[in-house]
Length: 397
Ligand SMILES: C[S@@+](CC[C@H](N)C(=O)[O-])C[C@H]1O[C@@H](n2cnc3c(N)ncnc32)[C@H](O)[C@@H]1O
Image (cartoon, rainbow, N blue to C red; front, side, top):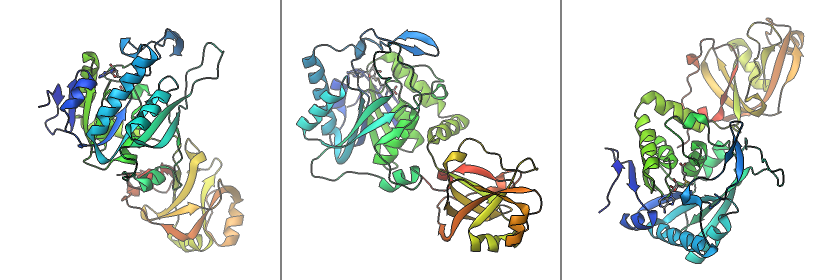
């Protein structure tokens, strides 16, 4: 029988308080679809760093102090062995680390019969500076992904990852910002992971309804991401203050606005491909489709294109007429060209409201099907062009 610290009435979030070496024994064998583990890296050795412009000690807590190499090896081997017995046969485990712990973790995984699938390099796009100036700045963490068995296959949502990556195969280098203030509203944990990292991990290796275990739950990031994505969660944490923080974070999800805010922020991807949503008059649309050309007023005339963040990642064009009949196409040339109104009129378009236009090219023969109903009437001025992330069109499950 599991002694539960907290469980939601729907049983999608279960928290156990205590040492994971003991508490994992209470979890049924072969019952877990995926594990994310962010164990102690054992790097609390009195070093310094910068946070919000202030010099701070990097020590995280007694749990991160470590001991002899034998102690660190035995510690990792024990929890990794327990995790393996909890995983289903097609289950996978993700373990984060740095050079301080990751080589020992790798050795244990291989000794225990796991098969290593990838080592992801998480490159933080906003690392704090290195104050000692004796090394390169630390900007990465490594995340090993391994499956339970050498031979039995594992779950991998390859297509979802491809969609997240703008239609091309995702690599093992992930550029994601470090944890942000937007996800620390219920309190702080010294080594909190960002929801954006867990979003990708959970989408890659689980399906809706699956159960995810985190033996070093901390502030419960894995559980929050799991529940936002319709997965179940079991977390174990030895420090009561962090259990309480995780509960506050979970309770906040009951508020529909907060749920939506976190979901939207978690899905934001600074690398994501964007779509230009552009109205074309009924009378111009056939010609646009024949030539693979669309255009937007440029310069200082009313309704001109406003270039803002995300424009540098433009890869698709969505044509519509007053919000109706949206069609999605891939851009054929990156960027845009400037045409005069006369240039466009000579081609047969009725461009007459501005002296200059930004022209975008797309492949009209390859309309792209998408699975998310997109309501272009929601915008006040449907005729003004704007950009949206590609994931608004493609449903990520
Ligand atoms: C690196 S932090 C995890 C942070 C977490 N990923 C988050 O986003 O908040 C590791 C956590 O494991 C806890 N911990 C360390 N050793 C543990 C053990 N043997 N059993 C359970 N929890 C442990 C620590 O108290 C700490 O909160």
